[in-house]
Length: 76
Image (cartoon, rainbow, N blue to C red; front, side, top):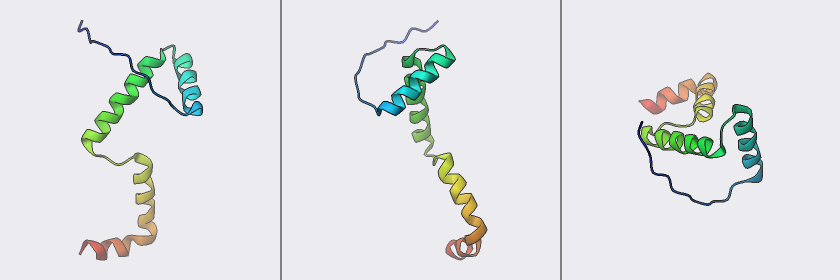
């Protein structure tokens, strides 16, 4: 089993977000620190891959219904 060194840090977060994280941790039987670590790891991975957020892509894909001809012209 690999041991990782941990370091404490302090920050501030929106109260509503923190309450949702607390509820998630409670519902999943996990500690908040494990959810924060998961979220930070996901953020790092997302930025490494340079992928847009899924909601942005959904809106972009939906826009093709109205703007497909424009997109085609722009691509030329």
